[in-house]
Length: 178
Image (cartoon, rainbow, N blue to C red; front, top):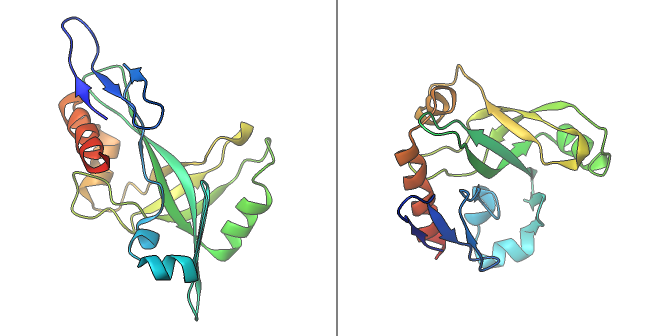
């Protein structure tokens, strides 16, 4: 992927997935939760189960459960927002409920979860408490970090970031993927 600025045009990037040039900002996505990424290849094959929306890690004494979610970051000096595709961990009860209703287009509910993606630009964003809200129409749930949790990412979520910061994050993600 690459970014470039053209005179009188929006910033563009070439998508590494489809190969097309896009002028909208890409969503910053994570293919798996950090907890899964920390596993060795052998541990992933022996303990892990991963698909595009669910992840489980089966340890001898516990099972960790994760779902894919979205987060929209307000960008103060532009009309665009920065979208993320992240992962959160859920309790066994919440995970089972979400999985049982995954195909139900009318199901709306909320869960408590812990952020399990390391977002570029912050020391660590793992274990930030979040409200996880499902949406009708089978869209991925959206998360809302707990406002009283003291972390720079939480403050930025509620206060917004600059366009320059958003583009810096996009470029960092692209650099790390490419």
